[in-house]
View 1: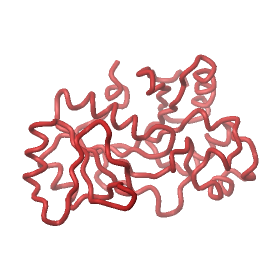
View 2: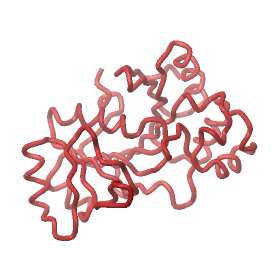
View 3: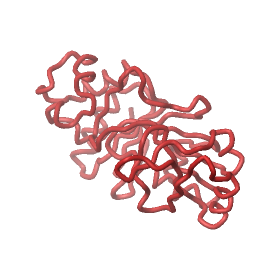
Length: 227
């Protein structure tokens, strides 16, 4: 089954947060969705330019009609305002404006410094108020490693789960973090590239009391967990 169906992606805004494969998830969903709708990829924080879809750098003089025209040709575009380090930040359009010219908006609403686990400060994540759903990504490779090596905002993580930064991350810790923050509608446990990692993901999913998708986005494989 297509991933967008498992995640029940609806027309409008979907927010993606966490760590361990947000960009790959967004690209996977965009590639599926563009077959029957137009897709805008953007951020409420900062993202790297897409190496898959056309990037459109906007400023306050960019007309909305330009985005609409590009979508006619490319079906999916990544848009944003130029930021430092060749990254993009929030574009010069409101979500209501963008909704007039595209069918789906996929928002990377979080930064994780390319780490598999993310704890959030009080001002994070930056989820649009009109978002249909929030998908949280966790990399299974966070388990059995020191918290300080695999966690963005490790001090916050340690505060929430009552551990030290040198402690080994367990599935109980991850589940406790997700339950405490309660930011997500569904969890994607990613990087399950082997049978052993998939088994670990199954055990983790049983401690998360919301829908979980177990995936190897790298291999293009995913399914709903049996939790």
